[in-house]
Length: 132
Image 1 (tube, rainbow, N blue to C red):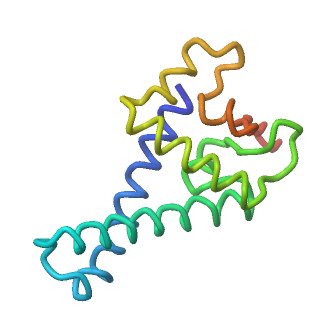
Image 2: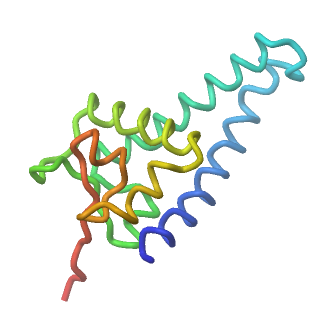
């Protein structure tokens, strides 16, 4: 349940990031009538999202939503992520989401309740205990 709440919160944050990023690129790309304009816009938004996620994952292992819900992303051995692993996880997560969310549904049958993209990338989400 915690991960679902974190994903909903993350969706709100990412929506705001995409909204602001769209205002920045809109004057450059125009009204997206031509295919090249749409492709440029989509590539730009994917780049912005990768920068958003990878910056947080590399810095602390937590996005703002993950900090709120005390979840951290680490390698299987507990080490912080590398840029390569962040890129692999981002690409796998995006692919899994685009394929009807299969990467998320996987957690229902996974023995450790991990997402498919985490299982393949060699990463995992861990709960951080409350500070007392």
